[in-house]
Image (tube, rainbow, N blue to C red; front, side, top):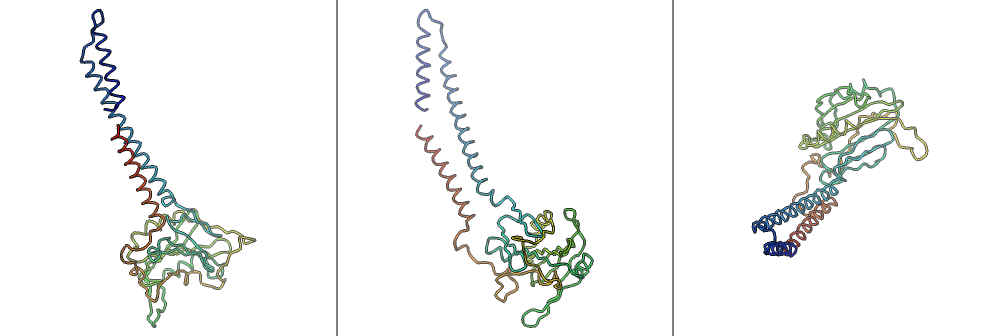
Length: 293
C-alpha cells in the first residue's frame, strides 16, 4: 500500500470514530473493509493500465522498426513499374535494370532484370511465346551444353495489358528457375525476368506473384533527363536477360551461402535489437517505479 492509500485509510478510520460519537449516526466498521477492498481494486486497475500502456508502446516501437521493411516500395523505370519486395533496390546496369535484395546472402538467391528495346520484326507476343515454348540452349565454360526445361508459356492479362508469361529451369544459369514476362508497348519490346535458385523457388514464388500483380508497362518518350539506353533493334530481347553476380566460376550459387553467423549486423538488425533494448529498458523502469511505491 502506498502512502496515498495509507492516508485514505487513516482518514476513513477517523471518520468512523467521529461518526460513532454519542449523538452521531452510527457507521458500521465493515465500511473500512469495503473501502480497503476498493483501494485494492484501484491499485489493480492502475497496474492493468500500466501494463496496457507498456504493450501499446511495445507495439508502436515494433511498428516503427518494421514499417520501413513491411511497406512495399514502388519501383518505376522509363517503361515499367511494380512494387519491390521489402529490402530490395534497383540499379541501372548498362541497358538493364537489376533489382536485388540488400542482404548479401539473398543477392545470391534471387534477382529481377528489366530490359527494353526498340521494337523490331521479331518483337510480338506470338514470337515471344513461340521462343519461350522451346528449350533454351547455351554452352557452359568447358564446352558443356546446357538445355533448359520449359515449364509453361502462355499469354496472361496483367492490369489490362497482355504479357507472355513463361517459366524455365536452367535457362540462364544451372540450378536456377527463371520466369519470363515479355510484352510490346507502342514501339518498345519489354521483358522482365525473375530468377531464383531452385532450392528457394517455393519461398520466392508468392513474392514474385505479388510483384507481377502490380506490374504495369507504358511508353515514356525519351527527352532531357528521361533519356535511357535501349537494346538494339536487331537484338533478341529474351536472350541473355538474366545476370547472376559473383559466380566465381561456380554456377550453383545457392550453395555459396556464408557459413556461421559472424560478421557485422545489417542496419535492419541493428534497428531491431536497439528497439528490443529500448522496450526492455521501459519495462525495467516501470517495474522499478512500482517497487518504490
